[in-house]
Length: 252
Image (cartoon, rainbow, N blue to C red):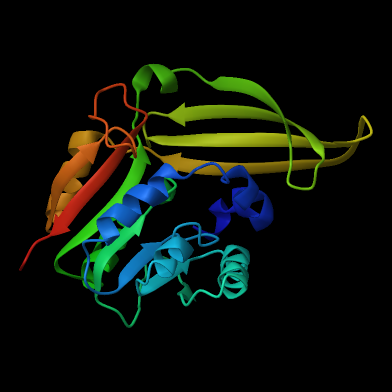
């Protein structure tokens, strides 16, 4: 997974891009309010959800593979005087001193686990760190075939966190055999109408189909309790943008 982190090279820009993404955190806070015991966030990034939960008085542990994202999370927690713990670990090899009442993962991070083996190791780690009857909540993009059938190319103009104008050229191509979408971006950074920097990044994202996901969870002793179409808890349909999965670990 270490070679699939180019999109997260600038944690400050990541926070800027996600400054208006709020509903996932609000829904997680709702579920957390019914939990008694530690809460574990996987792929926690810059602490976008970890810190708000800690502010509510929960004992929260955040885990991520990216050192830069974790460093920013720690800086934010210190600045906001929040008590939260952060660990740098690969989520396919979890080894933490905690049995959580709830484990969650947002930002479609489940799609970073590209192979069946990666998914199995992730779920085995969650199972080993979750109390029986505990909740595992995560999101993943819904594989809508008409959207994935042909390569997608588009451009976006925006302003970055440093008040620079940027032009991004995106190309996305889906491999139906591996169920992996490869997203490549070329980014031109402007100052006074002149290109001062050119950046490139790439990310691979695994898509998992609803029935495939339900069987995978069952194999690891998780029961899917709910599957919503978005973080507003709207009904899941074939055209929903996401699957918001709420599952419970079996008692044995």
